[in-house]
Image 1 (cartoon, one colour):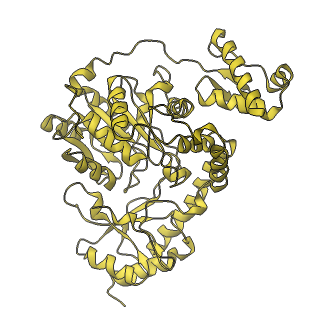
Image 2 (cartoon, one colour; image 1 turned 45 degrees about the vertical axis):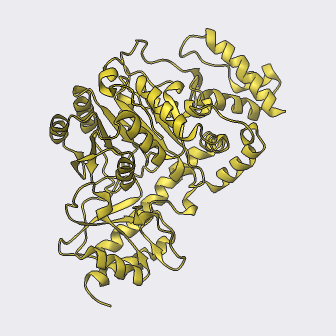
Image 3 (cartoon, one colour; image 1 turned 180 degrees about the horizontal axis):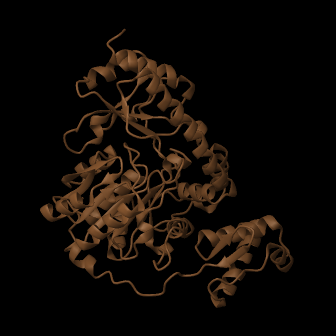
Amino acid sequence: MSNDSSARIVASLREWIATAAPGAKLPSTRELVARHGASPVTVQKALRTLTSQGMVESRPGVGTFVRAVRVARPNDYGWQTAALGPQPNRSPALSAALRMAPNDVVALHSGYPDRELLPERLVRAAFTRAARSDAAVSRPPAAGLPELQAWFATELGAAAPVGVAPPVPGDAVIVPGSQSGLSTAFRALVGAGRPLLMESPTYWGAILAAAQTGVPVVPVPSGSGGPGPDELDRAFRRTGARAFYAQPNFANPTAAQWSPALGDQVLEVVRGHGAFLIEDDWAHDFGITTDPVPVAARDDGGHVVYLRSLTKSVSPAVRIAGIVARGPARDRILADVQAEAMYVSGLLQAVALDVVTQPAWRTHVRNLGQQLAARRDLLAEALREHVPAAHLEAVPEGGLNLWVRLPDTTDLARLVRECEAAGVLVAPGDEWFPAEPTGRYLRLNYSGPNPGAFPEAARVLGRVMAGKP
């Protein structure tokens, strides 16, 4: 019954919003309770629905307001016609980080957070509600549930500065996880046989997606602060590439975060070449001492195609991600998604939407940053104490990993084998380079299980590096 009441309130407020000025304040919760004869919980549910659809915005302590459109001007996507080229005729070695670890080892190799870092109660409750809803037996729209589209667009638009038009819900396309999203973006925006610029080192899954879609990768050196704009510009000029894949916030594996100035410089280079930046914001929910600011929030010309996944922050059982793109690029992405999967499970979409629109979700994300900070610091300090030969350029301000440089004389394969024999799984850094590795590295995940064993794991690593049994 409360669902019907909430729907009636949503419908009534939509009619009011349609005639209200941008920025107009909605009636208070108390007024809405009296007007509709509903409970405060039902009214709050209706307001959350309108917020997720991008129609209103809440200002804590002040009230709820009709969402203002920051600019009202048409966007010219004509440049994409030349960038995308003719519409193509479509025709019909996994990383060590994916290894399942036995319970008796210290797992520093995995790319997924431990179960205790997930919002398990929210996820279980969301599955229960979704199983009882129409989502369990109905087919969702090809682009995704409208409310989930709106959530992804609103999340990105919240970071848009004044003068930049935020995305609208229709710009978002729901995909079954970021790996699928990368393959879709590479096929739709680049195409087999055409070059794709990519940071080096970078996410191994992006390297794999490029290989599987027949897209040759052109590596662009990227350090602890990100890539050099001049080097990126030269790569575009040399190759004629029309896209650059990057992770501006808490990159995997390096945990690098671009400065706002670098983001603007990269965006200028991309625009200058009439190209795309494929921005992978996989770690959006894993900020520790800084918050991620997507480059896509500063672009309304369609140059940045934005990918954000919920799989690692919500649950590995909820493989849901969103791609936000504008203009014809969005249409090509949707066409690829339809050809590959027709649609994404409505049940999983409903679960993801339920979790991220609960008030407890924000609390969970805040607490998650504190938990990650403690784990990060514990592992970093253990490495400094027990592995003096290892070099950690900087303690990351977000993400899940430490990127550790080892002496160039290190036999990395032997090191990995002997650590595993001693009960510690580590990930060799070679897998994260799209070309030859520039050194000997380990990627160590501090979000895995049993952080109390981090000091012992560091002692094992130190003994193996020193050649001691």
